Amino acid sequence: MDPVRHLRISLASLVTIIALGTLGYSTIEGWQSFDALYMTVITLATVGFNEVRPLYQEGKLFTIVLIIGGTGMIAYTLSCLLQFTLEGQLRTILGRKKLESRISKLRDHYIICGFGRIGHRICREFQSRPTPFVVVEKNPHQLERIAGGSQL
Image (cartoon, rainbow, N blue to C red; front, side, top):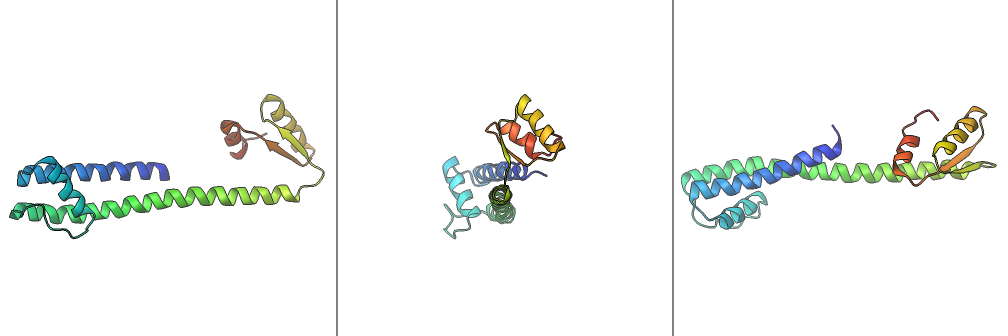
């Protein structure tokens, strides 16, 4: 599955757990929304503060469930965020380094500015010879087309 999709799902799940925790404390303990939200956040953050008010037996059981499910979801969300950040940055850094290395080795090459209709034809012609060339393009859709390895 796509890292962006993982991140979106994990963030949505985390927001859902916070909402359910707030609703749970409001329902079980009869607390106002802000107190219930505060209790949910300090429980999920595992900061060790005291309860907003003393808990009934049901509230203690709910807190146990919230800690187990919530801390697991927080760990999953953080891992998705870390994966998304590192993969994106590494891919960009490594891709750029590789490209810069390949370009620095080129000698007697052509620079094609733009990968539109004409630029595309020129690239196909150069590829068939083979003639060394570099394409400079600012349109992200065209960059994807070039990077995707579609036949020039």
